[in-house]
Amino acid sequence: MANTETALKECLSSIDGATAAALVDYTSGMALGTIGGGKDFNLEVAAAGNTDVVRSKLRTMELLGLKEEIEDILISLSSQYHLIRLLKGRGGNGLFLYLVLDGSRANLAMARHQLRRIESDLEV
Figure 1 (cartoon, rainbow, N blue to C red):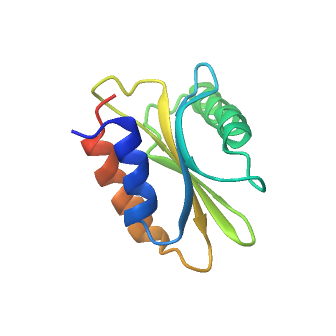
Figure 2 (figure 1 turned 120 degrees about the vertical axis):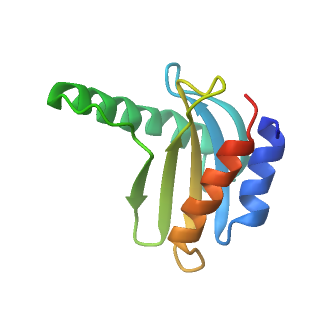
Figure 3 (figure 1 turned 45 degrees about the horizontal axis):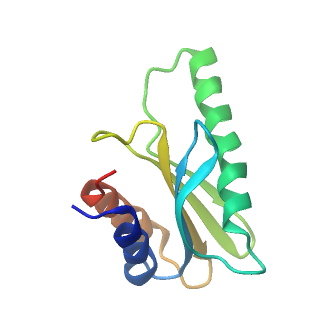
């Protein structure tokens, strides 16, 4: 089992093109841990903003009567991918992993696969 810091470090080291990662509580909008980002990319602001994305999607699914679970949410920008993976099980309720990928270096399918693996090893 990996703790938050170890899991986030693994995101950057094992996922090609990863430039930033965070573990976020979408009930409060607070990042519980971050790695990467920098002066040109405020990861705390991004984590809080993506909380609104998750809440909105969950609310929409409820209004539509959809009984499925969200695996992940992908936001494609011209030069980046932003991947949001909602955590399941072992205390992960209300949490998501947020990953920022350089679009020119990332393999999105592999990133999703590796993020699932990291999630399964994460102990919250």
